[in-house]
Length: 188
Image 1 (cartoon, rainbow, N blue to C red):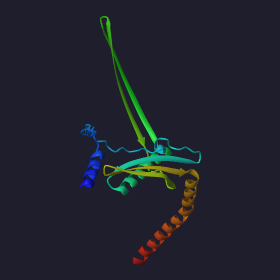
Image 2: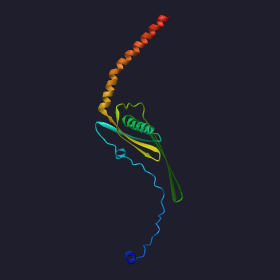
Image 3: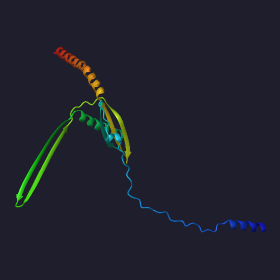
Image 4: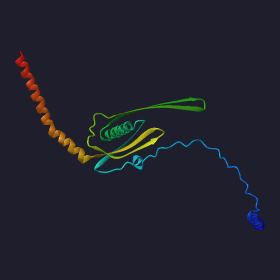
């Protein structure tokens, strides 16, 4: 019995006499509008590299289909490249001014019209390479950024190869035409 009294006293002596800490309810901060994921534009898209030996062009496209996004971005970059290689711009500006006065007051009116047409027709951009490409997925759609490099030397070599092949194509067309004419003569 004495032992149980000692155990009870020691347990009571170990108990803390401090008040329990106040538990504060969690602070609830009102949530702002949900943050939309953003697209990160690659540095090379806005700062296209330059070189004496190569031309560069960029393109971008958005699609729910990854491959379509990439294909369209390349096509847009090729269009920009073709525009840089060979395009024709026609511009027309018309300005009409009218001034009238009544007593001490003068009133002016002007009308400006501008029409610009940029034509890119049949430009050979064969030989380009995709120098950089980046695809990002945001809200279920893919945005692809593409940087094309068009080497002047590589394109000149491709053109020379085509010129070398052209006489053989002409020869084949002439031979086909001759055989066709022979077949027509035989059937008569």
